[in-house]
Length: 528
Image (cartoon, rainbow, N blue to C red; front, side, top):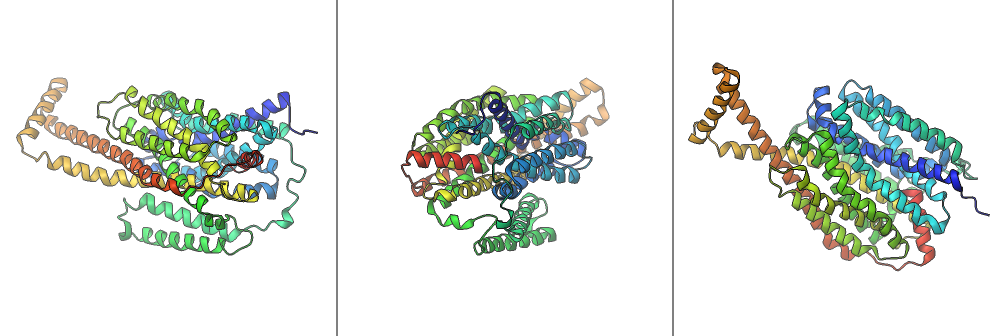
């Protein structure tokens, strides 16, 4: 007899799980359009406040591979509800934060709850459907995965335009409370939930090494440029801890029976190469959705809402495509050509964005962003599917969890690299621009005179007009230097995608039986 929920009960589970997952995904990007306001409010620069994004991503990277273990240890329903409470409470504390350190700390806690929320939501959603209907669940969840990160900037933009940045966190509270109550009353426990604790050994050492290695690596990537790399004692210390921590983590995880992350699976050639593609996909997806809002607001003068709206509308292309791609995958369509086309399209998007002129309007980004969305849709599910080709069914959950961790790590590293790259390129571009306009040249003198006359005409301030004119000219140079730097960052993303495309020849293609397809879909639901 079927034990899957029916009617209203199933509808509530679908609504609860998809809403919870979308809420978590919105929070990966909702702060992107608020960086300028947050930096001003907290008295820090944009490069420092980007840690609010990175802390969340690091927490996701740490918790995702541990989700299966924690759900087994505590019971899936209990773990899901507690994760939702942690996410909601941390959202409140983020909104109440008065300084950057406090905000970063609570964003990390929010990411711990959110990463678990995303993984467990899909598992619960898939269990609400019979195996034959799980492609429907995959389509529903896939739409949420694509829509969530892009809905974030739009919602965040509206809030920033009409209120203040703390509200971007506080809106999670009523949604979190309702979702928690619905999960408590409508999500059923599995018969064996939380009853196998005696057989599970917690890998404390592996977890601590992972946290130390990734945390210090992120600090080095984020702060290296501003602290002059190895000339900084903190960078040297964190760099050493990162190297020792990650190497120790790899060695330790390969030599124990119950590792927190089963790295032995990377001995499978297909999974190893798939993780490279997944890392670059995470690098591109998260970095592009970080760069665009900052470019649009800092340089092009878009409002926060205009920035979010410019991202949202083109993304609907991916939302429409996802269910069709999920259905194709469920019928055994080979994923490798889809991955190849998706990467080509994402590279095209990056180079199109890198060639736009400074006077672009919102509509000029439409087609590049549509191409980006189609590229995302073609990569997302095929990469998850490709991660398990050649693995035993029992290793599907671990393989997919490892792949998801690598995607989040790619995003965290990507944002850090982009920050440093923009900073470095800004300094170079500003130097080049200033060199091209030497002080005392006829061009500079004429420009300063024109600006000064304009200031005098408006304010009557003859004495201070020249000083203000030079300040205005300096700001214009800054703006142009930043513009060129962000274009360089888009170009860097495109290069990364082009470099990995030839590796597609190493991806294994295997025709799956109906039973294997069903197993893969189930594994995706339990491990995403």
